Amino acid sequence: MFYDLAADSWGNEERAAIDEVLASGRLTMGSKVLEFEAAFAEYFGRRFAVMTNSGSSANLIGVASLFYRADDPLQRGDEVIVPAIAWSTTYHPLQQYGLKLKFVDVELDTLNMDVSRLEDALTPRTRMIVGVSILGNPAALDVMREFADRHGLIFFEDNCESMDAELGGKKAGTFGHIGTYSSFFSHHISTIEGGIFTTDDKELNDLARSIRAHGWTRDLDKGSSLFEPQSEDFFEAYRFILPGYNVRPQEINAAVGLVQLKKLPRMTAARRQNFVKFNEMFGGDDRFIVQRENGKSSCFCFTIILNPEMNLSRQRVMDALKEADIGFRIITGGCFPRHDAIKYFDYELVGEMTNGDLAHDRGFFVGNHPFDLSPQIERLHQVLDAACT
Image 1 (cartoon, helix red, strand yellow):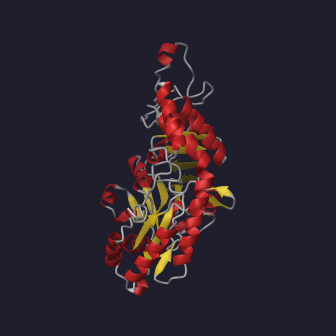
Image 2 (image 1 turned 90 degrees about the vertical axis):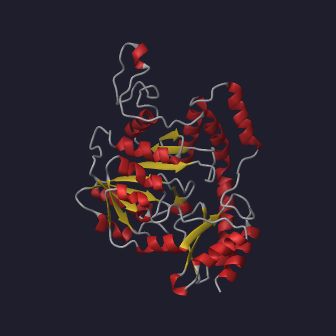
Image 3 (image 1 turned 90 degrees about the horizontal axis):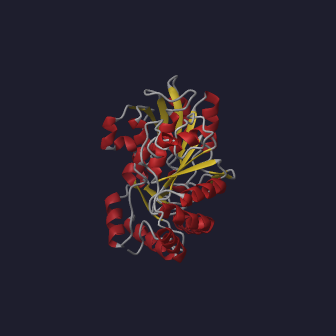
């Protein structure tokens, strides 16, 4: 494809790392996972990182861990404030653990939660805010954290689309009590499949480690507050203390992640250079609403919303993109209350989802990759310029 949604960011180093793991004979979670977790935590300035088999699983064990805290755990029926636009597995663990979702609309220009409506969403049952930075662009994470602290709420940060983004010199994903990341093929680093749970809280780290692997004690320090070691090692090795899952990564994922993490600053810089080119071509054009940068975006992709005031045909645009061999798709997961799955949720809309609906109905994104995309961006502009006359 001339301009695809995703591109391979691997080189010979990643393939050599895989060969090293294969030669070792240890393929399941082991020392490489521990090494990657330590490197990831150091890069992002967190005390703890727990690698999983996907960003969705990182969200799952993150939500689950909050239900098993010793003090003030979440309870079924508690309310959580969420943005109208995010990926499906931002929301699914919340539903699976019986939480009520309070949907807040997004800003049309940033595509992130409109924090001016947080007070409208707050009730005595509110226990948590989920902040999502859409497609590399930091949400108002500082405002959300301040609001959470002021009202005694948990701040859960789903940063699966925005690894290496920054707000006020602080990495996105580190504002929350929990921050999650994805290292899926198309994301900022690629470990084939993978995700990372991060926190500065020792108890949450221990809970997440146990829940990640069957709910057992094997991956916990002897000094963990979650259990008292028993005398018989035979039974201790298979001691289950929590309802858990098996969402462990493989050694191959971690070995590749160590290589990719070293490349991340350079790859982010290349994405940002493409972002400059994209804004030069589209930023001043009233026909298109493009994502306004908040803080320092890590530029996952480029979003375009056809200005509803211009009476442009989305179908004509999509047909032109297909004809030009340019990949495109809905913005993240679209406006989630519009999806069929919402019938299984306990939820409430906090006002109208006006901007979420506009992004759903008139928006799309094209890819951004960690190398020069000048020819692709220029061709994209030519195609859209002709289709939007």
